[in-house]
Structures are given as C-alpha cells and as structure tokens.
Length: 258
Image (tube, rainbow, N blue to C red; front, top):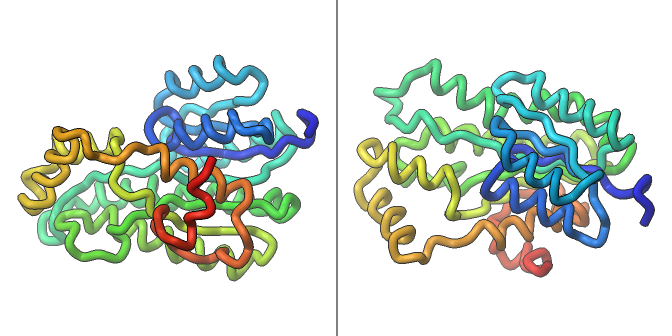
C-alpha cells in the first residue's frame, strides 16, 4: 500500500485515554493509516504527530463548537485527500444530577458534545464516506439503556441517541458501515472525574465500586476496547451495520485480536 492510498480516519477525543489508544493502533497498523486527531488538549495529539511523522494532522478545539468537527473533515480532505472512517469517541459526563435537580443549560452543553457534534460532523463527512464506502464507529455506553446509573440521565440519554443515530445512518446510507460500541468501564480521565467529583450525586454502591476497582488495580485498561474499535473502523462487516454491542460481546470477539 502506498502513502497515497492509505486509509484516512478521524478520531475524536484523541489526546488521551481510549481515543489516544485508538489513534495509536490505527497509526501503528500495517495499513499505514493517516489520522486526523481531534481534542480540546493539544499535547497528546502533538505526541502522536511527533511519533508518526507524515501520518497525523490534528484539530484542537471544543466539539461543542460544531465548526471543530467540520474542520476535521476538511482537514482530512485537504491534507490527505480522502476519508475512510470516523471514530466518534469524545464525550463528557457532566452534569451528573437527578432530573429534579439538573442544570438544563449544562444538559444542553453535554448534548452539544456527545450528540450534536457527531451529527454535524457526519453531515459534512457523508459525501466523502459514500465515495470511500467508509465506516463509522460511535462510542456508546451501557448507560444508554440501563437505569441503575443514578444521576447519569444526561450522559445516558445522549448515548441512547448515539445508538439510534448509528442505526439511522446505516439505514439511510447503505454503503456506509455504522456501529455503536460500549467500551465498558476503563481506566480513563472520565472515570477519574466520576470518582473525584461526582460521588455525592450517585448511588453510594456504584461510586464505591468505581473507587475500589481503581484502588485494587482491577479497573480494565483501554487497550481491549481500543483494539475492537480500531479493527471495526478498518474492517467492520456490513452485516453488523446499524447495531449496538458491548466491545466484549461474543459477536465482536473476532475484533479483539491485534
């Protein structure tokens, strides 16, 4: 494969954690992928660009500003000439609150990042994804359908919308693969925020569990879900398009290998 026909991917939330891990796997793979990384923080993306010269472009900005995602699409086309797939990983957890106490403006801001930024980026990207018969992976959560995540209604609602968006995209665009994937609990910056800032707004047993698995070292790594997601955005089969799965479901087990 030559540099000119290497696949080109956008990865949001790519400065750390799961997004960084996904981007690194795509860059290190034999396909010699090009990556447009998107995040609010530049440092991690600059590290990727230094480690993989010529393979990385990055866009620094808040996805709550819809122009950030659109700029990522434009960057992929202008710098690399095509777009093969997108991993929508970026998300925020706040506000954590009950429906009775939630800050509606904060709720809207969460949806700007977790849902509407995806929608606006997809709208800009679809013409190029049609051309490449591209693939879209939307990072979801068990909170999208389980009610025991007390106080997470903003986050969980946004992820339910993400699942529906994946199904809708698959139905509307038969040449574009789309799937939503739950990466499970991971050792991430979001988990740190949950432990340190939101315990008084959650059920005690849930918060205590998240603290315990961090303290005893049993909290899972981002590596297994990153492997699944990076494989799916490269080679996800059309028979899975429009579906939602946990990363460790038997259906996705073929994508757990490097």
